[in-house]
Length: 317
Ligand SMILES: Nc1ncnc2c1ncn2[C@@H]1O[C@H](COP(=O)(O)OP(=O)(O)OP(=O)(O)O)[C@@H](O)[C@H]1O
Image 1 (cartoon, rainbow, N blue to C red):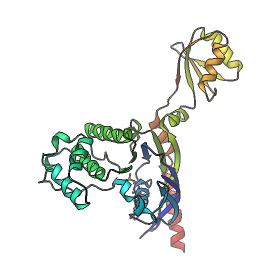
Image 2 (image 1 turned 135 degrees about the vertical axis):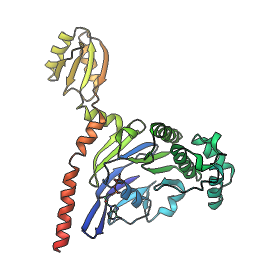
Image 3 (image 1 turned 180 degrees about the horizontal axis):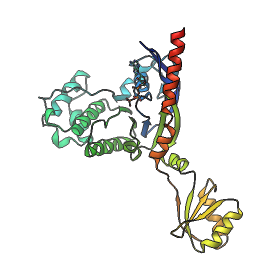
Image 4 (image 1 turned 90 degrees about the vertical axis):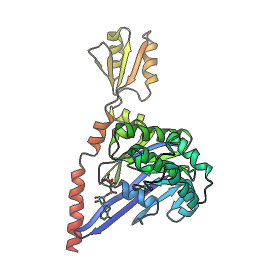
């Protein structure tokens, strides 16, 4: 999925509200892609535009190479989404609820047991929906989206209101779906909920892309590319690395913290090995992604100021 310059404004009684301000985003095929941003960043608005539920003011988006919303009918069968709390009948079992849905869209009923199994509700399908935990209810919603066997799943804040066990269940379900080769796009304002399961993420704020890439890559960027190295003769190793112009600080536990070093850690290992110094351990320093996320999205209040400006302009016009 590729999004380019997507924009959406709302006219409110107080003026014009910019919900999505020229968003660019790339969601690779296969894997879990976290769509992250603080409350009000524009995640739901973006997802609604991608699914053709609301119209964009401008910009473009493609799903499986098809421009949407124009060619949505061509891809709609390959896309499953949970955007709002799905409604099920509390007095019916999970299985009965899904059977009803399956009949409605012409899916053979054996598929129902298959999708229940896929979300780990195989043993609970014959229990009343009303008695399900929140996590089970949410997993039933996921099961419903799987009836069509979609290649792309879009979940808007699927862990909202769930307890840690429920969050864990949903995470495991998403991982399982991605491991089957599907693409899962999941939005959240809580990075830690997604960090553990996402392969790649887009971080947005004020309707714009702030950072994008694999979780490992972003962790590296957040850590400033520093490497922690355990090596024999750390004193000699430090001198050698400094000669190359890299920053080296000994750590209290006898390791070396290398900053401004090579993009490829192999270069560092080779430089040391050439001098008979063997690296026992080499770890990219991962600053906490949560702090990075907070840092990136910290100027959210600036966004408010920008919105006010637009509003003033609108009022003046
Ligand atoms: N129908 C609407 N009318 C007016 N403003 C809207 C409308 N929908 C969204 N907005 C505004 O657009 C901005 C983006 O909202 P959106 O719901 O897309 O954010 P979000 O990232 O999904 O946030 P959350 O995590 O709180 O759901 C917000 O400032 C919101 O108030």
